[in-house]
Length: 262
Image (cartoon, rainbow, N blue to C red; front, side, top):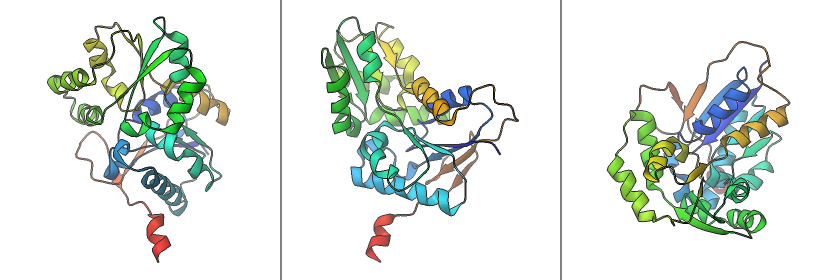
């Protein structure tokens, strides 16, 4: 039986990580789960995100999906809830965290930026990453929820409102000294080209997709040499997806807080 990898995000952004993993392990079985009923996670509380991930574990169990590894392809969920969720399951879980360390190694100006959701920017985990890996340089933090919405729209409609994108980037007012900008939300690589065009390629954009794929391959001890027939990708969502692009099964996540009250 093929290895079953489930990739989870609040929306479609985690597909940017999924693509890297599929390139490394093309013959695995994949499921993609988006909790779009609560999109974006950057606007949710830590406890809410923990509850939703606990609901995901219960869903996998109830549906007997036989998942071998879960990738939480959401920086917000990974920085706020990963340790809590690992305590309730034996399934290996790989999280996504902002690429602060490689950015600190790449910068020539000694000034990097982190562009993420408000929850990731304010996370103690993110603060710890910066203190551990970028203490000798300047790290400027920028948060946006609007970019998540623009990325979702671009993915599903192939249309991007450039004026809205530029208005949001203008609002962020990213420092001119920054030469490496970490895309600390998996939605943001969907916008990588137009963001790069906005900066006129003067800023190097960096995300964690390739590093996560390498980590998954290492944990599963698999490679792109694994033989087999490529399996269909199954999509799940917690709210309606208005698109002809994907065949998505809509499901409901178990809420542990409701169980506590019964």
